[in-house]
Length: 306
Image (cartoon, rainbow, N blue to C red; front, side, top):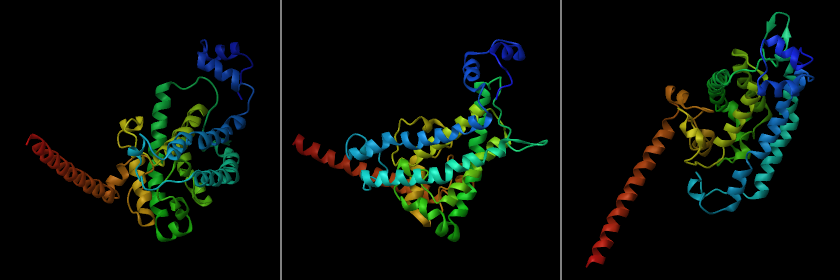
């Protein structure tokens, strides 16, 4: 809750007039507790899990059309009942695990004497766009590196059989399957998401953006479609749908493409060799087919000229 009763008090404390964004924030948050603001994540996650995958659901149900050429595993298509079943399983996990986890994790951002585990602030001034960008970059890097090693552990014999095999029930992933996992995996992989804000504490708005963007990214990489116009293709070392789809395609035996967001860990530790070999083989096959097509085209052109 903000320590100012009026906008004038806030402006006096800052020594300047509030920006438009700060005025909006004051009007919305001034009388709300930090706990209430923190719990907004539950609503954000529910909306993201429910709404963001919808365009991909429609594309999948169309079955054919201009988007077919972008489908990574074109021979695998799920029916509406199958996709809705996945959504129901995700929502069950959301209400039984994710939501309660958000509620009980709040004490971790509170002050404990002079110790502060995660110092998420809710007051004024608001962070600048540059500050938000840098902090989000750190959050993604920290989460990605930590998630990489946890993911590798989950592909060990015990981790896969007891926990991670649930997520791999979808060998051709769909957007709704991004958060589809064993309850223990949901809890374990929740840890990396909090490490970034713990290392570089920021504003509540930054924290909201981080939670939202991380889930949207996961939905995009599980979409099953590799669209050339996706803005994330311009992000250096970004994996994307095609990169992660290979991991699901190989399945439980996969020792490749463990990264959640970026590819640098897989490259450094040599866990992208299978993927790179597959891309090399496919590229060679396409070149050979193109050569055959050109040769046949030339042959037909010769017949026509005769």
